[in-house]
Image (cartoon, rainbow, N blue to C red; front, side, top):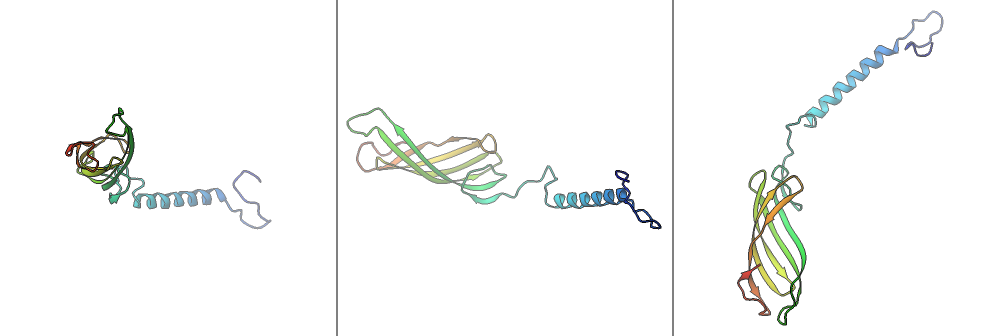
Length: 153
């Protein structure tokens, strides 16, 4: 008989009831899976990932202890006779998360105007992927004499 949950048997054999067997097997498999997920911390809403020591991409303190700063930027200023209005800057540095939402660090800035600057950095994490940075700095070397060193970066 189809749909009754009982298998068809030959005359003289006991019918096998599959519904309780399937239900018990499904329940057992579910319990084993839930136990495995709980052991991995996937079911615990308070579980935090272990932060990595160093990351290339910056993340808040719950994900990363220290991270690299690599910034490449292009700028254009008002043209003058002394300074090329186009400039490309490259910042290299590192930051350390000092709390769940704050990081501090520093970087060195190189420019196509043959200057080198130093920056102190503060980062406030607004979310896991969004932050606000403050990075004041000074130019410590200027090869062409187009700007006075030290000067603000």
